[in-house]
Length: 147
Image (cartoon, rainbow, N blue to C red; front, side):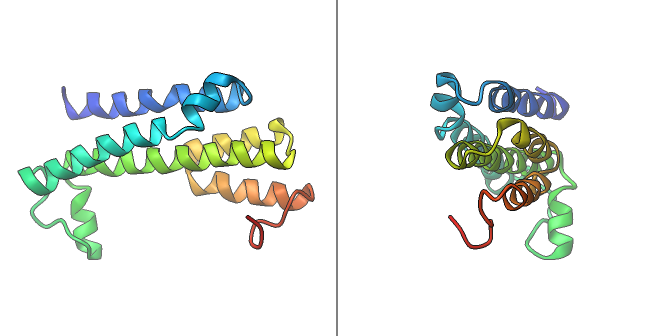
């Protein structure tokens, strides 16, 4: 498998979850797969394997580390890109699933959450920010002080 194919495979892996969140928010399959820890565990496992490959088997830029330049170097190797991308996909999906559950619990209209879900899928934190604004504007809770 090439690095490009790995990237495509990672993206293809999360699409069904996002489709369920958007089009089947109350379906049993959404609850048992997307709202469980299934997808985050799968993505987390992929992340762990890629991270072990980087740290343990040298599939990383030799300058990689936790300085600004080191983090830049992390993404200079294809394995670093896939490692980072799997991290983003896992947490963006986790946030999207939380938005879906929170909206159901608070009675926020699903159609109001769809732009938030799309925003989370494509732009990560932007979707969460939009959801916080929608909660505030609809009187469904001020996100800074409520759980």
